[in-house]
Length: 248
Image 1: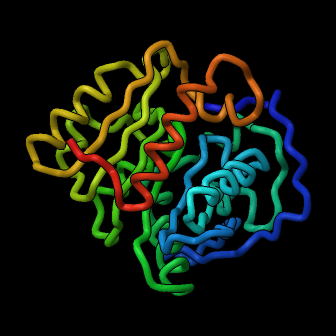
Image 2: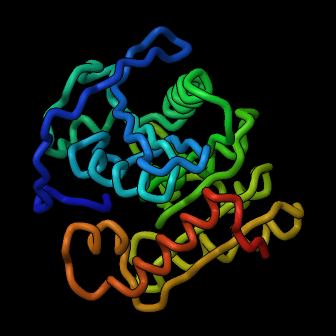
């Protein structure tokens, strides 16, 4: 998990949108609209704790790139779609299911497409980063996917993604990794870059030396030591969402 319960963000009066997945399950989402929109839309996938207030705040930070950002919760089937508690509950996380998340991402993409025309991306942090990359293997018509410190190991009822899962991705990829990430070994970005190169899929893999798991989030919430790397990561994210990514 990227963010623990040390991070406290006022929930303010964040309006929760209720979406419906393919199986009829309802789940919550929050839309952060860009003040200076560039036409891009992003489905944002949080860490395993789900759509807590810090990730709604991060959605607003993403919106500063010019994208309209819809962050979704993973636990509508267990917690309900309404405003949820802000504490991370490990027992709730036991219900995590990557395939159900993919179904929810599909509904979120459809919701964004119903608002306006333009490219739709998926991106996320930690397990959400892996979820976003996994969404790139599905036929969702995404313009690209962003994996930030993507944790590809087992979670909830889902097994670890296979080492070569990147070979099935068919949309442009931005990968953001910390060189000192103890949760995501270097083999993840090495395998991803190798498989995408073999497939001829446009990709940009950024590895920030000395940076730990969740460094972008920790910088956003005021922890020292990550500012320079986080700034460069946000520049890469903004360029990718704006269509100016320098693919390898």
